[in-house]
Image (cartoon, rainbow, N blue to C red; front, side, top):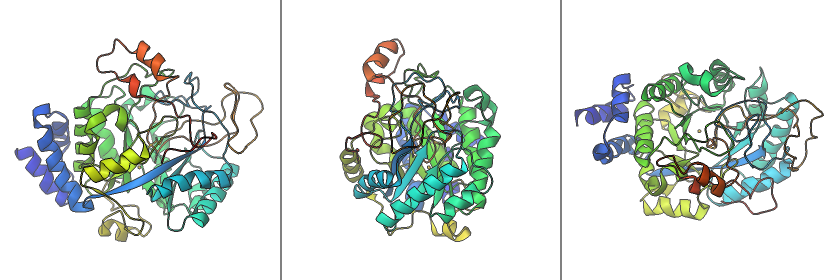
Length: 435
């Protein structure tokens, strides 16, 4: 297939495909799927071998966000029956992170719901970063706190943060259809702030929200221009209680084609398989390892993922290996281009789950005092905080329960709400995490 040979050659040279070539990947048939995966796999192995980087999410503050992102379970007006709690104490967050690190994760992603952090929030997260670094030598820490104000990225870096996640999510042309409380340019500005502060930028997308092939290609080309080091690819989880609850648009085959397109456009960056992989890829998850070189281990922000042990078995059975803590993830030329890593000035650059604005002050009234993961009653406002998305697998809204969702979506062809489970363990609970 001439198209695939051309794309492999370009990927090995870090050359940008044309938009027409990227669209052609998405338009390939199911009969051609294994050829597409094999071709993109050559590019993945050239830059990353058979290594799989493990990342682990810690949801520092969950729910009650003032932003209206249609995909998010923590959005303003969400009726999803998710966990709601205020800020975890640094020692509790460090304990949660340790579970993922023990399972093999080399990066911990700290996520908080909200439009963006206050200066007090940055102080809180800085203490959490310091606690995690003190307890776990060599671990990478990525923060995902929403829209950044001037100087906040520099403060996070001074505290020891290695990276910052903020996803673009969808194309500029359609962004206003998904979110109205902030703009696409607000997101771009935050990624640039992180980049300029010397943090490794992480920014990705959500597929399956009803977007066109052109929208998918446009957002991935925009990401390449922004040049993050990691690109998380999230697949919408249409949880009951959110505006996109009926958007079941993905098949396992389409999800794989999307991942292949991202790899061809962003050949030498960390492509992270993020939120929704269990729901949409299902038994084809191992094939995705030939395209993505990074995944989230265990659970996501408000939904439960595949068992951590199953993740590790899948990696081994597919002939891949977990990337060790002493291994540099990115190719040498990207590391050299920006010490601390912000990419190559032309390349493209994730947990998944999520990178957007999703939670903090949720209405009028007295804010809940910052606590150690104290549960919050539904409808109660939480002190202004950060965003629940980014280096994170996106969780497009959370279901009140798989049973209820299954009944609601029974008429949608291909819907699999039975695979959706709201997180009830780990951070913010007394139950052991999944790692």
